Image (cartoon, rainbow, N blue to C red; front, side, top):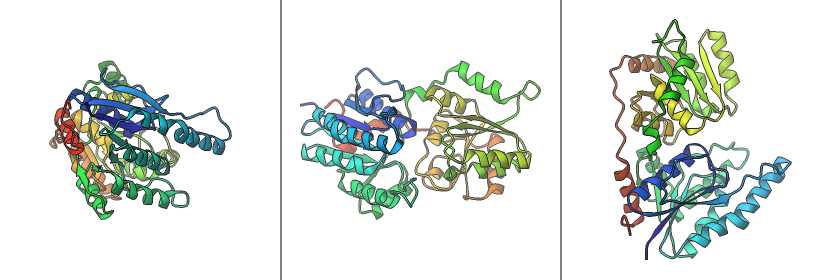
Length: 366
């Protein structure tokens, strides 16, 4: 009987979703039978035809007020989403849960899969909670640690995360982030559009330093602005959805006289890939991190990167600096712009897929 790998990522958008979709595609290309369970309105990401795509999560954006919508979303997930996922699995299959979107809602899926005699995989993606401590942060952490111990195999994307998970009592497998094949073929027209957006006719060769992804306080855009006031050359461009840290950074840039070009909002995947391809350096001055999809994407596109030495960033970045040091950040950007550093080459997709299949105990094509 063929073993099917079920990749479950309920969110349907953002870096965790894109990684899960890339993993599903890579496993299918390696010959595995794969089903991808995600949101009904998920972002459009290319998948091989062999991957069965199934809906298991509904945002119910029409339900008001917000508190009622959260209850309705949770009820839909527990009452329909989890049963839909479990109805598709057979004894001996693999159920691999990606991300940590509301861990309390993921636990029933893991338990249900185990009761159906499936192997349970878990990729938390971060070893810390981004939810405020005053909300469900501590409870999230306890549940994530339990899921890591409960799973048959838990995946870490960096040596640092692996060490943290071992401290939880889990036995993690170190694997690379998967880069989708779409990341290697940015659309030339979109790349040129970004270049025109950032560079004026009078300064067509001006270097562009890109800050990409969600703009949250822990991502350190304020540190990037402080560094931009110190580095020798380069325009600071921001591309991503504001989650509470953009206004302060824009005001600080105005005060310091830093030229900042901002494109706020969630970027469809082709736009994000093109923006990274169009930049001269990608900067990730994070205060906390797991393993950055932005860094992995930049490496796949051959873009040099500068990142603070937190989480697994040092294992992907071209140049790393201590966190919270704008002087070191500025010097590293100047170094990266000199053209000397070479970004690390990403592993081959087929090799990454085989490492996952080995961790599951599944042979390609089995």
